[in-house]
Length: 227
Image 1 (cartoon, rainbow, N blue to C red):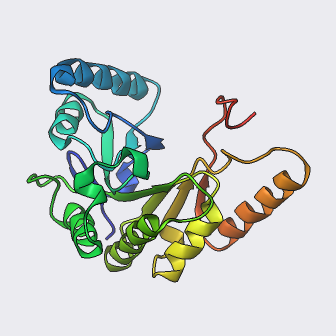
Image 2 (cartoon, rainbow, N blue to C red):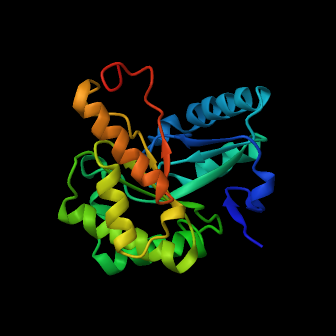
């Protein structure tokens, strides 16, 4: 039977309930003097979410303080699915950015099959990201690793896909990812919203959906991205 890894343990997909698919429970680098207030605020927000019917959140911050997340999860009824992988270049820590391809893949594989940072908490999704229409050499390396780990484990891949959903989809699938286990977020951000650009955008998204990929339109309200 399929299972899903959450911060508090392994569960069945049927138990996830109403799920928010792209959240950031804690910042990627919480200063030590902010640990207590960060835990308190995150717990408050999750408990507020639980009161309006949210059962699970997917925390798409791929480098995170897992012990802080574990404490938040202990205090809230909301299940947290944590991610592994890497975010866009300008936010990457050198310890992640400078990994070789073999070491990057080993890190992602370890975090989905064994645990994160010495714990037994396993990532339930792989997060990768670009902010441009084309993939850089570093992006390609990270996406190849994600595709191979997905192929080996069935753990799904979520991407930060501003301007690049179709490029990302093709690259992942061409490197072995299961198209039905790919999930592209912020897809409407960064595009023009008039005339031909809108028609091209719609055609691109429709082609991804027809080929099995999932799409998340979640930037509404950010007028500088999505009028």
